[in-house]
Length: 214
Image (cartoon, rainbow, N blue to C red; front, side, top):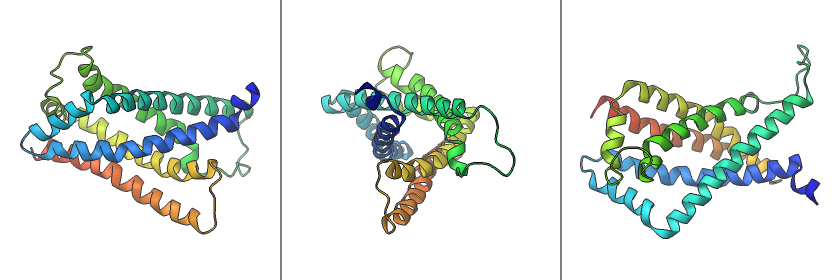
C-alpha cells in the first residue's frame, strides 16, 4: 500500500491536482489586484481585509499554502528522480522526446517559488505581524513597491516565466489525470495558451501601469 501511495505515478497525479487547484486561484488574485489601478484605495483594502478575515477564506488560505508546498515538493522530488535515473548526459541526436517547456519546468517553477517567498515577505508576513507594515493598507504597500524599478524587473520576469510554466502545466495536468482525447486535447491546449497569456499579461499590465503611469 505504501508503495502505491508514494510511487512516482501517485506523486504526479497529486501534483497535477494541486496544480489545477492553483490555476483556479490566479484569476481571483488577478481580479483583486486590478483594484490597485483605482485612484481610491478603499476597494482594494476592503477586498484584502475580507480575504484576511472571512473564516472560509482563511481556511482556503491554509489549504492554498498546503497545496503550494505539495506541488513544489513533489515537483522537486520528481525532477531529482528523473536526473538520477539518467546520470549520463544524452548523446547528441539521441535525446528523449521531451518538450522545450517540460525540460525547463523545474527552473521556471523555482523562479516562481522565489517570487512567492518575496511576495509572502511583502504582504502575507505583514498580515501576520512578522514584517513591519500596515495590514489595513496593502494598497499603499503595493503602490510603494511598484515604484521601485528593481521590483518591477523581478515581477515582470517572474510573470513572463509563469506564462511558460502555466502553458505546460495546464495541458500536462489533464494528460497526467488520463483525460486525453483526440477532440478535447487540442481544445485544452488552446485554452492553456490563452490562459498562459492572459493571466501573466494582466499582472504585467498592473505592474507597468503603476510603475510608469501613476
